[in-house]
Length: 449
Image 1 (cartoon, one colour):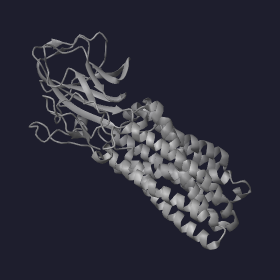
Image 2 (image 1 turned 30 degrees about the horizontal axis):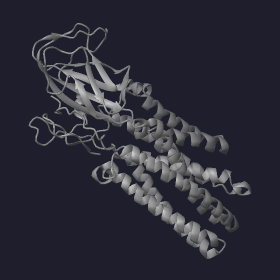
Image 3 (image 1 turned 30 degrees about the vertical axis):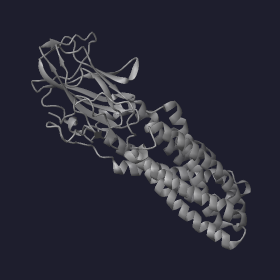
């Protein structure tokens, strides 16, 4: 998604750029002239930053570049601090800072800005650090920085890293199939004497497809956040050492264990419990992890669980209608009642997330994230219309064969629309939310030197 930044300041700013975490201010400041190098480079962002997967590189006037040691400010997880070798001498003149960070929502962001040192100076860092020897030229990963400079800038050109389409598809389809499989299993296990109608092969297939695609998504995500798109062993270790990496790994592990429970152990209750845990944990993946997590994560988890119940109920009814007409009458009323609560939960939690992630209603039409959310809202309203039609028009007369055929056809169409909404959800996770209403202190962004 494209984010709007302030343009009314004296320095040149990015008008629209592919950002998730926004650089608010820095020390040294962009385009500043300072007498000596600061003790440390400080970058303050709009979101929590993952230091294990972040980089700050100092490009000197000589053309040499040095990778700084980075860490979060112990008092502010939004601040990234880069320090150089103790007592190292740096030449004066124009220098650049090339930064690339991973925000807490799991998305890479990068940029470049310049400053000038009027005289040679010494970094007076009090913390002994070990950094790689200076290298020439600038690091290769700067070419992957997610930056887009304004067209009026004479020294910079647009360079955006596109949204990973395959990763988004893997996530949307994988999580959707997994959720529906768990939803079908839930209705089957709670169906009393009709639990013998559980479609074991269907549930296993849905969970298997979901698990495999979630594994594929994890691999594609790691490739996406890698500076070179070819992650090394050390980079993967860094990913697993970060909170965002551990959450993604835990979700994959839970999905695999769920597949084991349903396909190998053949213990459906264990599989259901593990599957629910996987869906709940999925609430901590993406934007909720970075934006108001104490509220966003639980509401996202409830949102996913409710969607699992809704989608699973549709598939369960379609299956039962093919197996037992009398059972279909009973289950249609039960599923319809439970689905009503699921729809209410989806509406409430969806509204909360919309309020958390959008600044104003106009964001629904100004930003790519808002447009996707708007399309999801439209899809949800259509699905609610189907649900109302089923509950008040068809379910009361479900005992007739003709009504059951109408219900089956209508539910298939509803499931198709739900599939489209699920696919949109996969892309929503990779599209940045609109920028905060307060204007960021802009930095000049340029191509890598």
